[in-house]
Length: 145
Image (cartoon, rainbow, N blue to C red; front, side, top):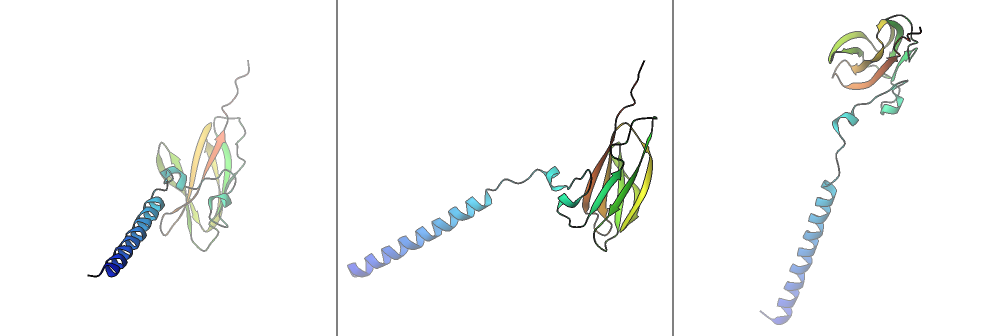
């Protein structure tokens, strides 16, 4: 092999090696993004779910917070999936979900709100995808002497 051809081959191999090395570095750098914690993927809302990234979704309680008074308070849960999808509203009690209401949009009274936090979740019915969650609060009754 001639020296000129050998030099040309060496330069070509060097360039190919640098190109591959650059691709590997870019690949590794692109894969090293931090992943969000699992809880941050779930949308949450206290007044409406429009901040959750689901355009048109409404999920709120009126009133929220529930005024203190008797041992149990009342609020109305209002929802709209923002699409033609039917929604399912669940109330969470002791870590278990219980179906509270269904429909593309609707409202339903919850006359059993307890002091503290009461959690509700709105899912799409077809794929049980969480659209929004809502925490209804009620202060503990005050004990005045």
